[in-house]
Length: 101
Image (cartoon, rainbow, N blue to C red; front, side, top):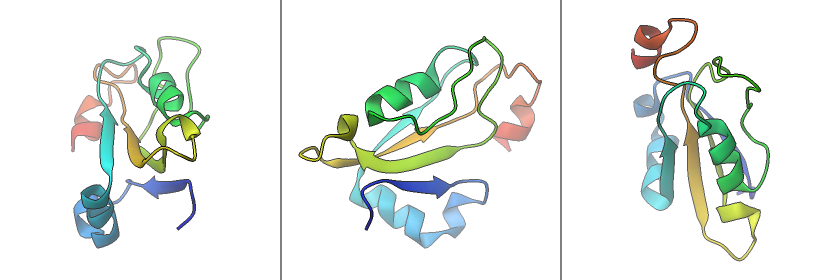
């Protein structure tokens, strides 16, 4: 398995057995919070690499759930983890209902 693996959550994660198994095999960190409060930047810091798009303003940047299987701070000696970035609560484009669905 590659060291860094991106996962597409635009389809239901429950329907994909591989994603469910990955969540059983690795620790998972899920970023949840208000729009514009640094979830994506924090996720990138945890990963030690720029996997997630970051907005320079308080406007929404993340449009859908994104995840990566990587290592803590991108250090080879660290355990693998799954980091999930989510759209913010209080989305600046009024998409909260869509994101929750």
